[in-house]
Amino acid sequence: MENKGLLFIPDISGFTRFINETEIDHSRLIIQELLELLINTNQMGLEVSEVEGDAILFYKFGEAPRLDELYRQVENMFRSFHRQLMAYEYRRYCQCKACTSAINLTLKVITHYGEFTGYNVKNFQKLLGRDVIVAHQLLKNDIEQHEYWLVTNSLLPNDPPPGFAEWMQWNVSSKQTESGDIPFRYTQLSPLKKDVQPEPISPLLLSNKTKVITVSREYDVGIIPLFHATGDVTYRNRWREGVKQVKEVNHFLPRVGVRYRCIMENGETVVYASSYSFSPERIEFSETDENDDSIMYYTLEKIGEHTTRFTLDYYRPKNWLFEIVFKLMWKNRFQQQLKQSLLNLDSLSKEIRLPKAVE
Image 1: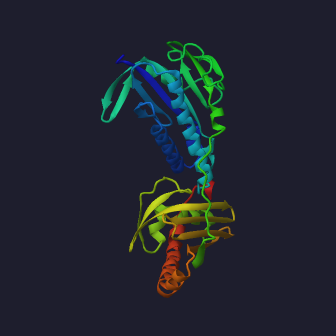
Image 2: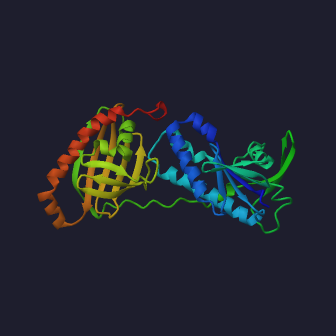
Image 3: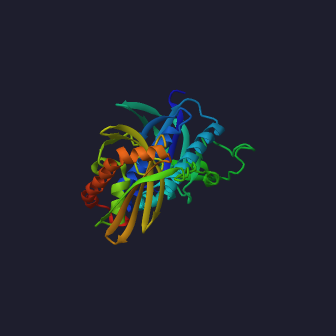
């Protein structure tokens, strides 16, 4: 059995059109997150041979796995994939074509059992053998829908036994190749999306906070470029006075829930994006420190096609003693720091260049 094993290929359908028609950098980051998610949801001890653009070639030498074990792996990957897309759709900041169309990506899974061998190239185990070719040939087929699980006869020679995922409707088909037909069965996976829900977003509570500082400034730049300058935390040290560095950002693209470590001149703190709302005329988002001690609330208002008002509101927990001490000792200095930040933002906002699709 040392040269026989499972070949398991999850493939993100719509990837080519997604890359060709949308903004390339955000497309790449979205697909990168999804591919990493698929690797992290591996529960069968599958090995990764290579990442092939929009797909991952997994393998596992040994006896053929049971159908129910395979199904649990497929189900876990499929649900996690769509949970990630839904979460990004509800939480994303960006309105570019790549980000708004990500929710339409789909996933199919090819599973095949056969003979193959491997050889090492640095840290990768490359696979060789006719059955490796067969598995890849099956990625191109006549199935019209793009969310399915395809199982060759080497793993499923007959219909599944009664009681196995009764909602599934299995179809029989084959792939014509130069070396002969490859028979297989397939079933749609779309019903699995019905009860997939992203984690709920906790509401932002300002009722227990008091606004201690507000500063505002108008900019001769459109609302979307200014939003990218302010909402993308990787730019933060370029305009926020006192911020030396932003580290350990836990997501590639800005969204509600993003956490990062903010290195300040007088220390550091962990901050997370806590709320977001978007309309073409007004964008609001907030960031809260991990101890819930303070909230920075950002508001962008469209004044004209190339004019935007940007406002920073700083909130602290309601505490009359703190408010008195803050006014006496810290307010003036921090307010001047924020005003300087708005001045710094002027030059950065004019550097932002976006594709026409997101302007």
